[in-house]
Length: 390
Image (cartoon, rainbow, N blue to C red; front, side, top):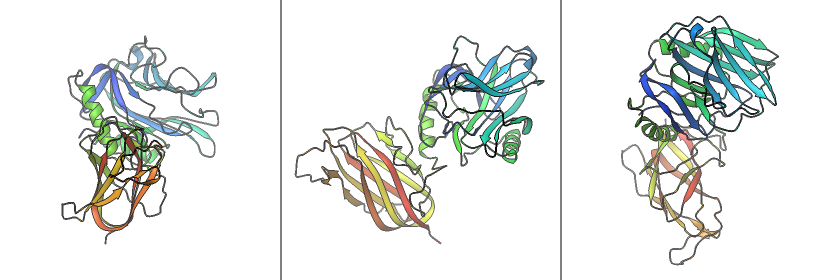
């Protein structure tokens, strides 16, 4: 499975005009590409990383945007190369711009380089630019960062504020965004891994990861990527979860069959984010633990949003490591605050959020939630609580 996108709270789609080409690791990407919606979790601190290769020596290229967040409005964040051999990093705060500029770079045509930018406000504000694993520029106190990023899309290889500007003159690969400023040791580790041809694996704090292992035929590439995005997000697990219980367990998940128009993340620890379905038919959600656990609680937060239809039952079954799911435990869904009664032909117009629980279901390494519904709806969260079996 191609690992192109990683996010806690968001799914995304990719669109643009360009092509997949040979990259630093596998395939990279050229041209204009847009991801939506926003992919940064926070603006006050973070990290942006990628590998790039230029089509000409840096002294010969025109000003060119590497990537930018949002549009030319307060909260705009962008990184661009400028003629003469430099990189600038800029944040728009109100009507003013703050950032850093690194001059005197000597990148040759076709050479691969690793770029990392970190910023934050620990004891004082700081902004650092790393080239090939080493800090090449850092400044303190002066940088200011916006309270939030400009609304809009994440533009890779082009200027979202000026589409007439030429796209980035080169190849971009292994683009990642983080909601935390990575330490120098981690930046160096990522650089060395890339030099050895090893792909970056998602870690806590990573909100976006694009590896671009797409179809070489770009006409088919974006569609293939969109499917891989959804798959990867759903199986990624929580990275910066908000714990409701102190014994919550991590898991990966998928839908069978694939649910269309799913958004959000099932297991980020937040009821407010959700995975929704627009299809009115039964389907399964498969939750996979890394090892067998003794489950104390299964908590399912769900609601429907098609007013005149019903969620009917949740069938929850468990695989105790035998490779087969046992007989399901049936949970009748609510209507008007009462359990759904198939003998009563009513509809629940409230579209309220309900929480369903199963206590002490026993040992399992997989859990299957089977939904029976003629309503469109969503899961806000599925929590598995317990302890890993010894």
